[in-house]
Amino acid sequence: MSADDKIPASDISDALVRLRLQVGERPSEPAEQPQASTNKSKDGNPKSENLPIKTDLRLVEPAVFDPEDLTKAAGTVGALIDWISAASLYPNRPLALGAALVTVGTLIGQRVAGLTHGSTHLYVVGIGGSASGKQQGIDSAKEALNEIGAQDRIGAGDFRSSVALVNSLKKQSVFCSFIDEYGLVLQRIGNKGAGGYEYDVVSVLQQLWGLNWTYFNSPAAARENSQRIFAPAFSLLGLSVPEHFYGAVTLKQIAGGLLNRHLIIRGEDRPPLQNRADGSWKVPGELKRRLQALYQQWPKLTLEEILNKRPTICRSNR
Image (cartoon, rainbow, N blue to C red; front, side, top):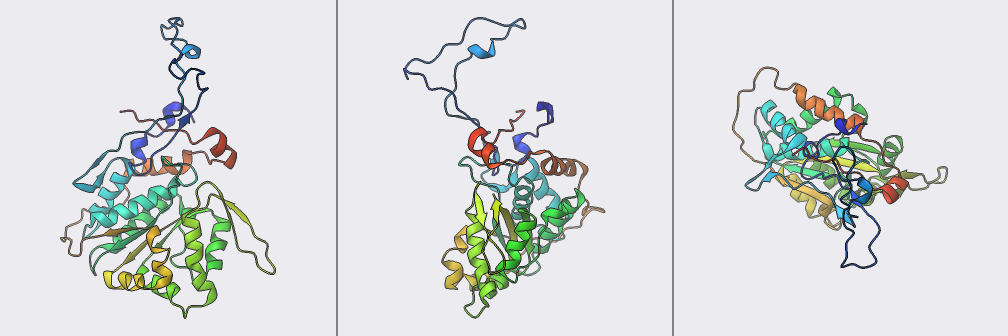
């Protein structure tokens, strides 16, 4: 991929920033930094080999957002929020934000690192009352992924056992699940009366969330060896009415370690009804182009590349 083909960092989102660490030799005398030579090349620019050495430099694009309304985001995340809201009978921008973050985070999974080398997979819970436009986020996210040929990134809408979740990861280590009535799902898997494999879903979800650029060792069984999966990036977008979600929070198994791994977004309970434009459900052409670029162009990073080369920054044109 040439430099001209790279996608601006603003197209990824403020929350998902590309990172590059340029590490050079440290000078023997900290107070004296190497000086740039006055020698110039034929084009009039300083010779690159004579430029000052940069040590531990983090190149980061400044955040772009509206502190009064965090749903007004830049780049592809912002474009997704706008489209989801325009396609909804009951536009609920906070819930659209959750769907946009999960969609973009899934498309760039295993390719992009945050400032602390964190991965881009997320567990997002969108909470809203009945008839508050919750379903639109799931429908639009699926439509966007299907439209760009990323069906492989869409996982099951529920997991009845930890084995089912792990088997899905063995086939595809980067994907997301869109789960309706997520509060009821949490109540089911967090209930002490649940079966062993179903109860173990909580443990697997906790492990997967905390893995960044390292291996997940799948559980071993009598007839199946453990399998190493590098940097698994499983995201989920769960939707729930308040009473079901907060009912699950009271369960010790959920509140003890899984709950704090979620990004909880409270949507509007009574968003206004709007008249949607004809064809508003279709992914806009420019948004589709951006999503296709995120899905197709980023090179997959190996463990060696992470440790030695570090993720490379995608610099802004601004």
